[in-house]
Image (cartoon, rainbow over all chains, first blue to last red; front, side, top):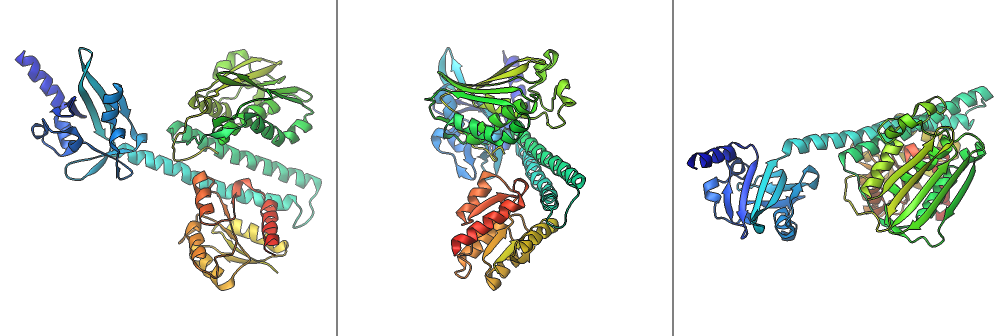
Length: 370
Length: 124
């Protein structure tokens, strides 16, 4: 018995993470060595004290309101609460030092009754520095890459517009190719940025009541030049009384843009594209069907992975980054929706997106997607 | 002849936009950093400022607020032309009084020129 207790103590005091256990009255019943070091408080001195005096939470240098303190939430919700780097919380040690914190709080239950909580935490200063550096690099890269790309765009525009002299047809054609390639590069930079924000979990969602049908139609009208050039037949159908759904218009636009431009891009001339939006409570069902090249059966499981492009379209269409469907799926899943598809090579593809009518949940993030 | 102040630190972009504006019949004043941009705006009172955001010495945001504080430059329309395209940046510039916010990599020069002409026509 004694042996077991001292073994347990040895384990607790050797842990690299801080551990604090409290009772129902928020009084500390035990604290390990690591917690003592992090909070600059001797463990034996902490016993019996109110945890609210020991662990003071801050966000953006402001003390966290009582009801938002994760320990309180874990105890009232009787749920395990985890706080990670992106929650942006700091804790103040006894000597005034603030450190960014990651933690896990589990309600302590004895025979099914709440008896307090166990708090496991660590200092994430290093992780925060790395995260910051990554975010800064992404934003710097976006800005720095776009500057020379803008220059290429502008000079090409002036040359193609023959503002400084006339061009032969061949010269015009080559300059146009240069300009088109440059636009693709800009799209690639934007997509990579979006992917990095998705992967970092830092993108924002700002819902506002929107009409999905009008966003779909507006994206289609932007695609009109390609539709006309390929003589595609496009039909749009939607329930006449679609309700406004609270969603982020930018994200919804990205969904339509990718799915519709894929349909246009990967459908041979004189093919057909159908967009329909139906009310199927509790969801909105968006269907985008084409009579295009289709996705080979053996590659269908990979189409939502990053940088994947199916073999049958690589040689038909040089354009495409392999990032679009990954971005689309990520946005839809974060919104509580679903995306599925059927495809037959040589016959066409149908994508079905269901979005909950309850809409997207607001998410504060450093950056929106573009 | 209408005077446009072009505040842009990238030489290639400044040359492209400056040349274009001259061909379109504008007089062009150029600044390649924020301090020069404020000084030129105060000394020359251009009809419109085309303003970059990331510039040495003073950012476009700082330039905007300084122009707003000085009664002699307060009413000069400022159009932001930047490669920062985030909502927060756009909102910040709008709050500081920018009349428009264009992202360089997404906008054709002829669109920029059309917007400038439209804005100047409103002022008449």
